[in-house]
Image (cartoon, rainbow, N blue to C red; front, side):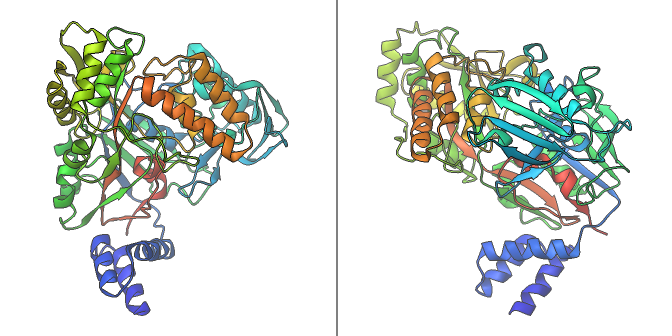
Length: 529
């Protein structure tokens, strides 16, 4: 049986059998899906990688307003671009370990207040300049500046001082934080020459590829960096990213062979697509979540009774069944699920309750005028349909939701974090501190619900400093309950990341950190010979 499985796994690696077919044959031989996938990963490692060729990727999440400034990246295409030309100090590996990139090691003081990142030697930027600790320092300083409007601003707030000392970047914290290295894995923190102070949009980094064509909202083309330091990344000679926000167009591009990889397969067609020849549908559960966000400082959403009415008026299970088609789980109006360390599973699950929704709506004193919810196809797969379901379930409680469909282009610059009630998504973060610091700390630039409470901030800082695991878990539980019961987040579902992968692609692996292998499929996958 072992020899037969090895032979079958080799056929998958060579593109002669799909992953689905292999798992099915393995099951017939008494092998679990988990073991079968492990064998495939081992086989791919043994067979590959293949160097050369052009890898083409079709992605939702690109707009004409996108730039190459890491501080501004807010959707999948800009993040994928950053991953190709830049690198942060560290990344988070699929198993949750640290993956050292611009830094080669990190050490902490006993109280976790002082962290020393040793920079990797003999690494060059695309312009020929040698990477130094001063570049890392300048990068962190730029993202700590409120004028940069960086998405990483919230996680930089706990830093009291930084300095470059030889090959080391030394970071001093106000309070100890055992999770600091994971915060430094934030994709905004790509190390740039002089921190990007001269030109943050220049796309000059230490990454595996150099940017050759930059047509925001259309396509981006890259060539292999001949001086890249890591030969385990960047296998293709060229990578092309096509912006395909329309789900049907994206799927058709994969089926026709125009692209090798796509993100955000609509769950409605995932089962059918997985039966198509020469490709497979790959999904992985993680921390991503689809949401409706309310600005708690803007009427009528500054009334918690109204916020509670809307939270009880959404049918979460219906959305998982009809929007995700089982590719996900119900949410509970807090951004943390069981994929996170220190998750508290005793927090009561909020359920659809027409009577409670109507009761809270009556208590809110709302005047009955339409409550406008803005959405777009690009907000998340099925967002328009999800908004329609929300409208229907709210209507049963007498809540007048009005859906306004916005264009995809400009959604992340003109609607999200601008309009007071809209559909959105989050890919999640490796640890709870980073998720809360990025989106719910009062000073966070990406605080998209305008949740600003001193007591919440104090608890978050206390959790960072708490070394007792049980006590830390208890604090995180309080933070989650605060958001669930008083915040502006309506989180009906945690989504799986669902992708389409051509049989011509090698190196695909599951990564729960974010979609498209934590946006690094372009670096880790290859085109088979």
